Amino acid sequence: MSRVVRAALVLWFLVPLVPILLWAFANRWPFPDLLPQQWGLDGVRSGLAAGAPHAFVVSATLGLAVAAIATPAGALAARALTSGRLPIPRVVEAVLLAPLILPAFAVALGLDVLVLRTRVPSPLAVVAVLSVAAIPYTTYLMRVAFGAYDKGFEEEARTLGASRATVLIRVQIPLLAPALSGAAFLAFLVGWTDYVVTLLIGGGRMVSVPILVASFAAGTGNSSVVAALSLAAVIPPLILLTLVARAGPRTGTST
Amino acid sequence: MSSPAAEPGAWRAALWVLPALVPVATILVAGLGSALLQSLGLMPLVGAPALTIDAYRVNAGDIATSAALSVAIATAATAIGVLIGVTTALTAVAGRRWALWAGTVTVPVPHLIGAATIGLLLADSGLLARLFGLSEGGWPALVGGRWWIAVVLEYAWKESAFIALVVAAVLATRVAAYDETAAVLGASRRARLRLVTFPLIRPAVVAAATISFTYTLGSYEVALLLGRAYPEPLPVMAIRLFTSVDLATRPQAAAAAIVTAVLALLAVAGALMTLRRSAGWR
Image 1 (cartoon, each protein chain N blue to C red):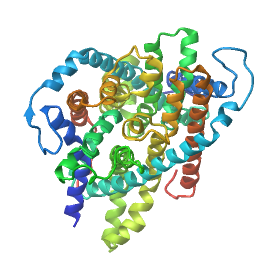
Image 2 (cartoon, each protein chain N blue to C red):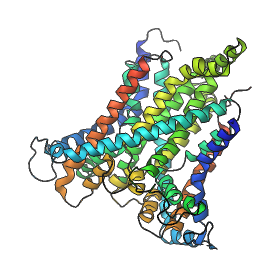
Image 3 (cartoon, helix red, strand yellow):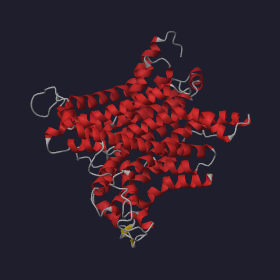
Image 4 (cartoon, chains in turn purple, orange):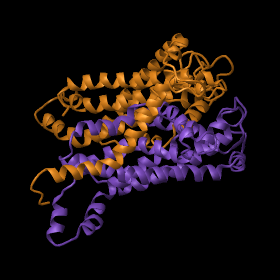
């Protein structure tokens, strides 16, 4: 019985990914056929011709920029929240977690006019909104990490004469590295997977991977391009995820 | 380390929180504030500002229908997500982690791509229709049909993985020890689930379900790709009005956005009230 449940759960999570795996390499796949009639790389070629390399550069830049901003900001905020010295910590925490529950499209829709009027470059505005969307994740993850973090190591290093900078580089960052990489990964994903903020504030000039996929998915007969682009969009973060998981905290149950 | 009073510590802590707090507060207040002003006619693209609730009134019927539809989709997706997510977490804590690993694979998949692949799976010419050999007319309208089934399943698919990961983390750190104690004291498997595991994971489940619910409520691209033209969920309505060539519909777009934000806040208020009554909340 429980084996059946487990098998059903694995199927539930993995079966929806099967169509893009097949379609990405299908040149011809007419309807009633269970498998493609002709395999090939037409989808990949069409994707490349439609500007996929540029879209991947845009998405990677977005992801990296968001990670570079939201990770240190979240780590510092988490340190402050766990220090026990912050005034009105509950209010601060509520504000920092608010982007999780307030709809990003509503924020982007409101900001669009302000961005136009203040002439802030739209890529900058997109990065700012997505960094704000990522800060709840980085703050929460780092808060958990600081909660389990033993300050004794720092105090010992200071007692032994280490400077503040040395403690930061030799003690704090190595101890927190697994949590920092997890937080950076999640922040990267916020930039890498976004569609609606780039659409509303980017104003059509920022063509990221999801924007490109959407332009194909809106039409018909584009299944193999959509699938090839989708597969290419999912594989880099999956590789990153396995790297992060390997570096991750070894807190799993030992039994 | 040798700070005698709490004051310098408080100042430093306040300083540390600013790089996160300032952008979050600025963007949220500016974005939602501007949407609110636009919806009330106080920030028109052309002409003089004048306070009015016309943007809400003109579309009142459609906004109500869209709000009901959005809440229904988010409720259905979250219910399925909680059921499957909690089951997955429970199988993982029992030592069989395959399902949780499979769920982790879906985390980096953007919702837009999830919608594309679910479409290729469930459409009337999709993989499942091919597999079951059902041709025209025999396959139910899962994509673009009356019941928004493909949309609900796409959200439930991604949310169940998110909920599974959150609950599995709580199970691994807090619940395992209590569960073992109860087992040693002779509690049956069923009694342990009901009296130990469920009460301890309840806060995490409520929190994860609330995040999933509000996310689905404010999500655009899945309903756009897998839904039907009318009625529309609130975000689809808002963005259609926002990107319309007719500038006069901008305040109506902002009104739909504000209604979505208010519904999300109401959901959070409900969740906080539920959590306050549960013992595991600190």
